[in-house]
Structures are given as C-alpha cells and as structure tokens.
Length: 374
Ligand SMILES: [Ca+2]
Ligand SMILES: [Ca+2]
Ligand SMILES: [Ca+2]
Ligand SMILES: [Ca+2]
Image (cartoon, rainbow, N blue to C red):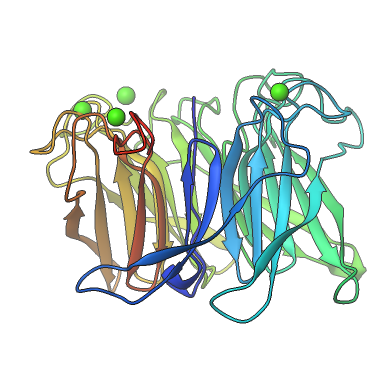
C-alpha cells in the first residue's frame, strides 16, 4: 500500500506542503487570487542519506518543524526498517531555509527495530514531540509499534531523544498498529485497522501524564459502535488541535452507499474517556469509494477523502467531503473535486485542514510533468 499524507500547520497555506512521488516540496502562499491560493515553492527537502526506494514522503508539520517518514530506509537496524527525518526552518516568516535537524530511528528496549518494520509509515509532530509509527514491527509481522521522540536543549543545539516505544496493546500479528498516528500536545491517537475482536479495527487514544515525574502514555482503546471485521477502522486518524475531538476513518466499511463505500467516526473527550459522537458517510457514497481513507480535523470542521469516488470527472477521480458541527450534530457542508479532475487521479488520497483552508492531494494526477506525476 502506497501512502502519503499531509499535515497542515495552524497558519494554513503560508506553511503548506505538498507531496509528489516521494519528493517533498515546501510552499508559501503568494498573492492570493479569487478563491485560490497561489503557492510559491520555498524549497525541496531530501534526506541527507537518501537512497533508492527509501519512500521518503509521509509528512507532518507544526510551526517551524517538519517530520518526514522514509519507511523503506535501510539503516543499522535493518533493511526497510525505516526512519523519520526532522527539518527546522530558520529565517524570516514567509521565507527561510529548511535544514535537517535529526534522523529518528526507534530503539525498542526488548526487540529493537528490525528488517521490514517500516517505521515512518506514519508521522506526527506537535511542539517538541514527534510520533513515528512502525506498523510492520516486529520483523514484518505487523503487530505494530510507535516511537515517541522529544526535542530538548538550548536553541541551536537541540537534540531528539526517544521518550517511549509503545507496542500494540493487544497481542497478535497483523494488526498494523501505527498505520496512522496523530498528535496534539499531550494527546495522541493511533490506528490499528486490522485489530482482532470482530470490531473492524481499533484506535487507541493516549494521554501523556507524568505522575511523580515519570512520563507515561496511558491508552484507551475504542471501536466503532457498529463495526464488523474488514471495516479497516483506524486506517486514518486525526486529532483536533483542541485535543477534545478526533476522527477515525473506516475506508472499507459497508453502508447504504455500498460495499466498502467507507465511513468515518467522530470521537469526543468526555471526562477522561473518548466516546463516539457521530458516524460520517458521503451523501452520494457508492461501493469502493474508500471514503475515510484519509481524514483531517480542525475545530468544528472535518474533511474526509474519498479517493476512489467516481463523478463527472471520471472513474476514481476522487473527492473530499467537508462536514461541520453545530452543537453535537455533524452535517455535510460541501463536496470538493478538482477543477481539472480526470479518471484515476485519486484526489482525496491526502488531506490537510487548518481553519478555513483545505489542501487535497491527488497523487495520480497526470499533467505536463508526466503520467501520475501527482
Ligand atoms: Ca530500503
Ligand atoms: Ca467492507
Ligand atoms: Ca470508484
Ligand atoms: Ca493518472
């Protein structure tokens, strides 16, 4: 499964990023035109030790920090063990230079990162904390593990150290814990889209606490209320910056739209517990849309990608749906498609949302640079 993601900074397009075929391009918004941004490329990031088939390009951003996963990176821990790279920006707002600050490679206390674990399949960053998912750990058996790294030290000489390695809370292979991760402050959510139990997958919420000065990440497992095996609940996750609402995609859920039409579930924090608030589906959902393959949230707005949606643009041209919350009720506000949509674009495969701005990736879009250039 090829996977790209976009995380958008709170400042919206001024710090947007796009991904195409493993090349990461940092853009800044130039002079806006009606209804559109006019992004200017700020730079192109590659890793200091880039090599063939690293699959560099799962991205997250917060403030002046970008984290990029390279899940097929070969390193001392093994072939395709994977890694994540941290970049920081220096210079004036709206411009500046991005430089690599660290390469993050997880160290699991018992088994360690191994061949085929693909750490970096998912990444998240908030402040001085980064999460890196290793969905195929251990040794490609796909129980799944996440690593948490923290940054400390004086400006100019910060260092990243591993704060925790958290294994999938349930025993067993092929759960893919860490296929998706999201982090805001001390609150994280991690997907495990093939977790057992007949629920169709799981998501695990984590709260970071430090009783007696010892940092702990305390989990809570959630399932969809109507989940059944094969739903792929947890394939995507997103956490609101307010840390009180999250959304979890279930891209292979069967519903009124058809087989594998897909859905997304909203969870809200009630006291110390996360409870389901709503189930989102597309107003015009159809079989095999994969609605929920990617999700994004900010405040009372959620965007859900439907990369295999067929519409006037063509089969599998793809779309994204915007939902807004009033009180506790979520309703569909808009359906987004590309102005030049064409068959097979997979618009909606990657998403980012900040305030009133959405970025949607279409990684199989054909244009002047080539077929499926994205
Ligand atoms: Ca490799
Ligand atoms: Ca299904
Ligand atoms: Ca389709
Ligand atoms: Ca194409």
